[in-house]
Each structure stands twice: as structure tokens, then as C-alpha cells.
Length: 190
Picture 1 (cartoon, rainbow, N blue to C red):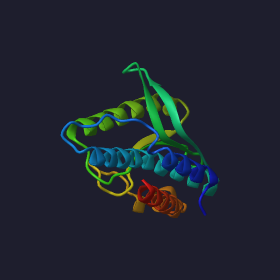
Picture 2: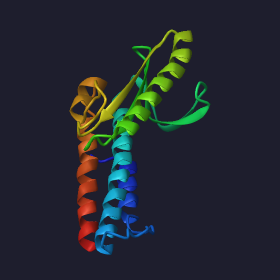
Picture 3: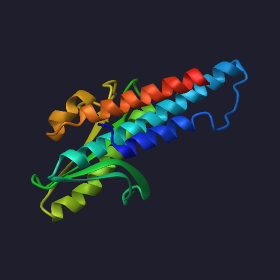
């Protein structure tokens, strides 16, 4: 069953796809540029839907964890803010896991891949400072939901249930189905 907050997020994301202005490309016909803009926005927003659906599934199904979604962390080494897609504290294991979540429907270029790896390393270093003083362990993970990722050892959507020990995948697939249905209706309308 689709979580109401996920449903609301999807409705808002789809309903505002054509609300924003964009710059026409001088070499691409305007109808194609408009279509590319709408599709690009939909793909980006879909990534956020996947993040929220995983978070809500964990909240609903796992009694021995605390999870946070879309939090900011100051990285002392880099003196900058990092956005945390998903942070999960496994109480029974005394473990803190950070998850960078991507759609994973295509590969990142080398610059983006370096940025993701750097962020994961810096976040892990910050967590190690805190967790070791509290006798906890920590880890960082990348989830490429559709499996087309560039970082070795990344999880895919098919790995989520086994990794978290509770059903997560079906909640995300329900969100994906609803998103696809709403998007298709909107594209037909546009």
C-alpha cells in the first residue's frame, strides 16, 4: 500500500512538471527541448520519490531502527555541508548506516563518480568520530535502485529486502508504479 506522504510527493512532483520556465536550446527544436525539460525534471524528482519510499518503508516495517531522510551534515574536514539521503541507526546491532540513493538507470560520468566517492569517504570519517566514542560501528553505502551504478559494491533495489531484513522493495515498486502512471497521464496531456 502506497504511503500517503509518498503519494502526496508524487502528485506534487508530477503536477508541477510544466510549471517552470526553461531556456530553449538554439539547435534543438522547441518541442523537443520542452519534452527533454519535462522528462529531465521527472527523472530527478523520481530519484527523490525512491529515497522517500525507502525511508517510509523502513519506518513502517522495522521496529529496531531509527531512520532520517534528507538531513544536512557539516563535514569538518571539508568545512562544507553534505545532504544525507538516508541515515539508519540499527539499535540491536549498534550500527549507523548512511545511504546515498540514486535512481541508477544510467552510469555517472567520472566527475560525478569521484564526487560521490569523496562524499561517502568524508561522511564515513565524520560518523567514525562519533560512533567509536559510543561503541557503535558505521558504514556508508550507495544504492543504485535500477542497478546501473558506477561504484563497486553498491546495492540495487533487488538487494534492499535482504540488506535491511524487512520488505522494502515492494513499497518502492508501488511508488514507482504510481509515479509512472501519473507521469504517463501528464505526458499524454502535455
